[in-house]
Length: 163
Image 1: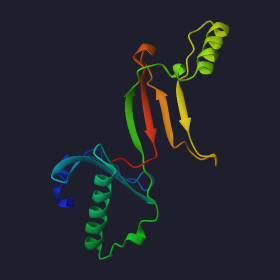
Image 2: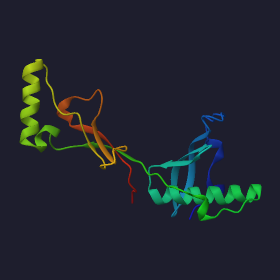
Image 3: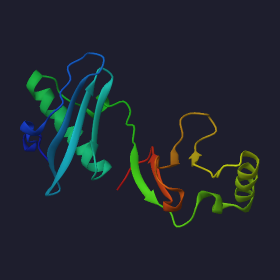
Image 4: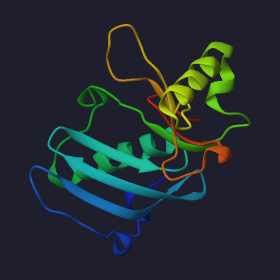
């Protein structure tokens, strides 16, 4: 379990004060499960954002600690009811064994047809997975920009919890 006092505030940089943009703290440290976790923290008028490269649980513990500490400072008791909704986002750079076109014979044939008709090398550059409601994608896999095709490097983001 971490403590807000474990954050080395002198390492926070790039603080922007704006009602619209909120308060943004970058490069902080938070002790979680005996590990020092790099933590970024944003405060907006409609919510709080904790970003780290450790786990969803580390970010959640940080937010619990931060809201409890802040509540004590201003005399407001934090209760779990105050947190109305959690939104998750996980981002990774992945290297695949094969090109996206190799996922399906039909996709490969379509890529070849586009290549012939355009006289340029055309390949699938991404995949989106989402729900029927037409809301934002749950999982995306997009080709890394400025990366040669043969490297098969992709940027992936998912609106899911991480371990």
